[in-house]
Amino acid sequence: MDGYKLLSYAAIALHDGTLLLSTDSELQTFSDLNIYPGGTLDASNAKQLKVKGNVVIGKNPGGGVLTAPSGNSITSFDVKGGFQVRSGATFNHNNGTVTLITRYGNTSATIAIEAGANEGTFYNLHKLWKRNIKLGSNIEVINNYRNNGSGYLKADGNNITIGGNWYTKANRYVTFKGGTGKVIFNG
Image (cartoon, rainbow, N blue to C red; front, side, top):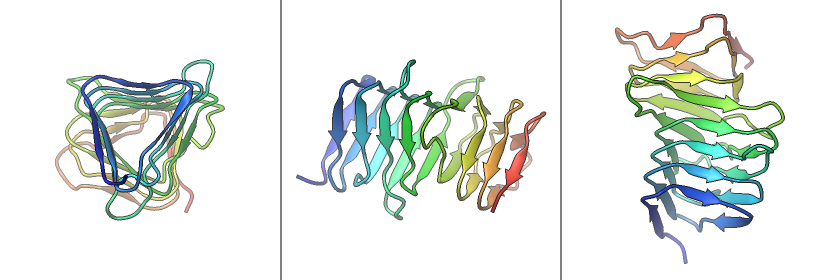
């Protein structure tokens, strides 16, 4: 059946199996989402995927697959922690938007796509809220990057390649700290 909501108050860990979310369904965890080698989460037809902790795809050594909700106007993929894709793991962006609603205290959530990760790019990346996000590796956003929050994106010596537009809300806060990292427009 379609249109169901699955809530987990603990972390979700997928090992050696597939979780297929049906059409218009929702999956929400109040903790982390860990997809281990042999585990697959297919949310391509889901309406919402909400993670109130970190998303980690794969554990060393590699493996694990996450397919995000499709990029239509009624779907969402919200993450309140960091986003990591380990070497050998796969993140299929499915032309959707990953919205980082960082919630951690004075520390930064980290985005890290390890070398050897298959399809470790984002289609759209949207940052909200007050907390900061740090790059733990180079990343690519095929379409648009938006920062509508007051927290900043810290390159930390890594590069971010943008294929579309870069939008930052005009406010009194610094929203990007490049350091030695670069923003590369490749549209």
